Structures are given as structure tokens and as C-alpha cells.
View 1 (cartoon, one colour):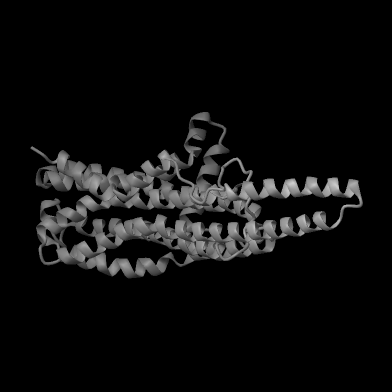
View 2: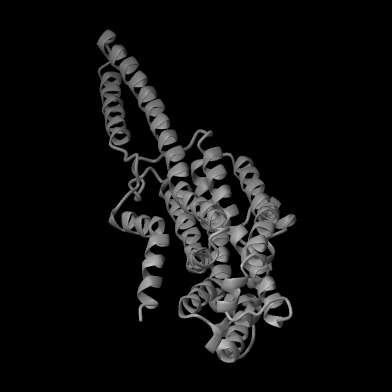
Amino acid sequence: MQVLLKNYPENIKSNYREYFLIRAINATSLFFKNTPFKVIQILGNPFLTSIILFGLIFDISFINFYSARSKFIAKDIFWGYLFALLWLNIGPWLIWKYKNSLNNNFILGLQKIIKEKKLTEQIFSKYHKIFSKYFWYIVIILLPFVYYIYFKSTPVLTNAGIFGPNDFHYWYFLIAICWAIILGSSGFMGVIVTILLIYEISKHNLFIDPLAVDEFGGLKFINNFILTTTTFFATGSLFFPIAFQVMSYEIQIAPHITFFLILAAFFILISYILPTLFLHFRIKTRKIEVLSNIKEKYEKLKKEIENNNNNIEDQLFKYFKLDLLRKEYLDYKGLNLFSCNFLTIIQLGLSTASPLIIKQLQNFLIKP
């Protein structure tokens, strides 16, 4: 397990309490990789490990369910099943990917822009705990709401091949829904953690390097992390098709589902916009502070040169220093405040439009 924690701050290594899903994937992946059989070692890939641990049981169960009830399942609901099943397979891996990005890439980047090591460890420890522990609050909020809709959805359940409380599959799907909510709650918590984390970072004096290769003052890793959060959370739209079908069968509870879908779409939107604005305004403020400081040094040195014409060597040195200050000023002045390119725009556009895209894809698939 220590191999998996090599990039963690020391205080996290010594007091390690990771989110249960991350622990399961890391431990199982490590087990597969350490086996002497090359075929099994392939399963050590976290993506495959995630599917084996958390997706395979739902895949097998759905195959058995569909083979027994296929003639009772409406075509539109069948595709809703497949979309939801797809997310149940990739969802655990996406959560692992998000947390791995936070644990490794983000914390290493943070140590470069906040020079106080203890401060970076405190920030990491705080949000590590929030994500790993407090996602249960979202589960407690969502579970009664979704179960209420499930118990009220008799017509749609019939068209989904589920025949009431006397049917084994009726209770099995309750378990599957509970698991989906636990994973979905991690997605909501990921958005909350990202927003709060970037907000906290924006309150500190960040070291901005105008010569950084990312052309964003060395802060592009933050923007990449924000975009990762948005993209991964947007995959939750794969549950929208089944929600749309419930709305079409259950007019009375349609407003409740509509509210939840709007809330989810809103989270997709703010997961990128809000932290990006926090970062933008902090960089803008920090840029002004640095430019003012350089200008003050420049003016002070310029006056010293004007008032002292005696020592030629000293004057030449000051002229050289003055030129360096001017170049440093221009470097900071030309610093980009937005890290945005064509691929970023495409990725963000697809993420925010994912509910509509999946809805259109569903309509296309269910056409006769």
C-alpha cells in the first residue's frame, strides 16, 4: 500500500483513511500486478480492476434479467438500462481517476505554487477528508428522494420488466439503485470539493512563473483538474435516459424528476465556471500585485541612477538591473489570465451539453 502512497504528504501517509472505493481498486490492482502470471497482471490496470470489482456483477445480473424478461421490456427502457449499466461499469474508475488526479498531480503542482509545505499538507488533508468521509451526507439526501420515485413508479416498472414487491428483481434493483446513488454522491462531492478547494487556494499568495512552459504561470494543472471534474461529473448524464422514461410514464412525479435533472445540469455548469472564476480573479489580483511591486522597484532604481553619476561601474550595474526589471515586468504583463484552447472548448462544450446529446442519442436508438 505504501507504493500507492509515494506522492502523498507525510501526514496523510501516517494517518491514511482513503475513500473505500479507492482503497479497493488500489489494493486489488496491486494484487493483480504482483501475481506471477502475465495474463492476470493485465487485470492490474485500474480500469479493468474497477470493472471486475464493481461492474461485472451488474453486467451478469442484467444479462440474466434480460434473458428472462426481454419480451416484457419496452425498447426505450432497454436503452435506458444500457446507458445506466455503462456508467455503473465506468463510474468507479472515473472516481478513482479523479481522486488519483487530486492525490498526485494536483498536490504536486500545489507544492510548486504555495511554497509553505505545511500549508499545502493542511489543505490536502482537509479536502481529502471531506471527499472520503462526508459524501455520505449526499447519500442521505438523495436516497429517500430516489426511492420515493421508485416506489411510486409502478407503470414504468411494469414496462421495465419488474412486477412489483413479489418479484425478486424488484428488490434487487433497489440494491442497484442504492449503489448507483453512493457512486453518484461521490460525483456531487467531487464537484463540491473542487469548488471549495480552488476557492481556498485563491486566498493564498500563489507563486506565478511567467516563463512556465504551460504559458499560464505554472497554474495550468489547476485548470486541467477543474476540467477533469466537469467532464467526469457530466458522465452522470448516462442516467438521464431512464429518468426521461420515468417522466413519460409518471406525470405526477415528473416535476420532482425535472427538478433533480435541472440540479444535476446546474452542477455540471458550475463545476467549471465557479472554480475557474475563483482562479481567474486570483491570478488577476496577483498579477497586479507583482506588476506594482516591480514598477515600484523600477522607479526607485531609476531615481538612484538619475541622482548618482559618480561611480560608472555602479551605474552600469544599475542600468543592467533596470533592464532586467523592465523585462520581468513585460513577462508578467503578457501572462495569460485564461488557460483555454480549442480542445478545452470542445471538452467543456461536450460536457455541458451531455444531457441533450444523450437525450438525442436515445431518441435515435428507439426509432422504429
